[in-house]
Image (cartoon, rainbow, N blue to C red; front, side, top):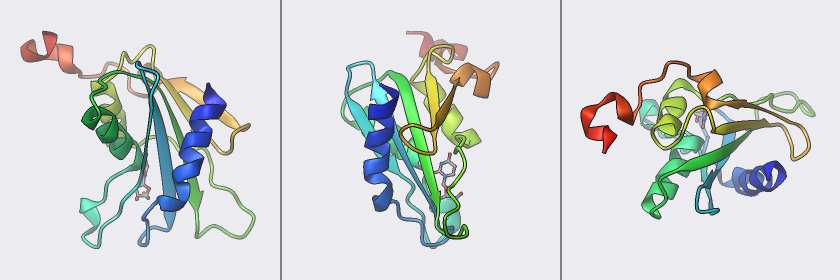
Length: 143
Ligand code: THU
């Protein structure tokens, strides 16, 4: 499962649009339906308008009708790093953690941070975002 998800992210990494940071990121989410949705970071000349890879993958999932994430794989490539130096394990930023929270059970969601198909580590979203604020924190979200 991990390798397939990482492969799906890796396949999209070249599509990352990161001319400003030079830091390419791709993410693949495995939905409860078994479908995999991918996303890359899409930067903007107006820097704050850039969108992270994980957010784009989640948006794609929701747009296609899925609502629950079981696992997410994230992989990065720093084009500004010295030749031969690979990017480290990319940990999701704060906003991405919150976006993942909306569509998951934090204790169950496996966040896979990969350097390659065979080199990865994982944590649960609960570990990355403890005591989170989620849909069931709001009355309207309890339905
Ligand atoms: N980035 C992501 O796509 N996901 C993260 O979780 C961390 C950061 C992107 C945003 C920006 O385009 C580039 O990486 C450098 O911050």
